[in-house]
Figure 1 (cartoon, rainbow, N blue to C red):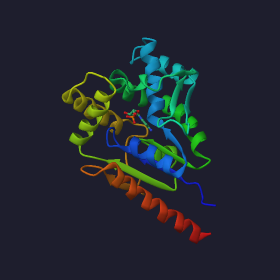
Figure 2 (figure 1 turned 180 degrees about the vertical axis):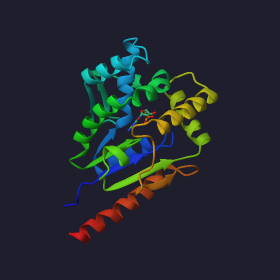
Figure 3 (figure 1 turned 45 degrees about the vertical axis):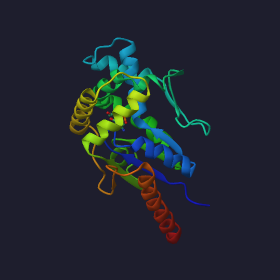
Length: 232
Ligand code: DC
């Protein structure tokens, strides 16, 4: 039987990594784990409880007392995100959450808590995990690591289209500004900044279709499986 790989997919917001990771997991019949959704769920709780984003101690306490679950189902294209048992899959995509999530994700103690949860899910293999630090910190021994990028304008256009489709009233300028600010905080934080792993394979999605990029990733996976089989 084929070995069930651990696949890390990192990159900035809007580069198309979640779409690729989701499609890949479906194709391989692996579990898809969206680590960003976990930070988003906690951020939603901070917003719902009107906690000040400067109140780091309170946010850490919330992180340690919150139950976040990602529920995969073969019948849904999107795993469900449960926050303390409540389905928040849609709410965590709200632009207000996007604007604040990097402030929560840069707190070291919050990351520590998420790391434990993410490693627990990832360690058994058969997983595609997407995020910012999966290949560098969460699963440094992943079998394959991809770093998905795109130029800032196509990322903003993609994100704008997604949000308009979901019914949010947003404009290009505000989406662009949010992406730039999020990149800045995610790339400059002290713990686990957004960065490609040394052994990451770069996939630039600018100007190419999802299918082309998926095919590229699948060809790397096939090569890896052949190599593993040869080693055994
Ligand atoms: O992938 P996303 O846009 O839903 O992620 C939301 C935020 O969560 C992102 O701006 C930074 C944070 N994040 C993180 O710090 N580490 C991860 N592994 C995933 C996301």
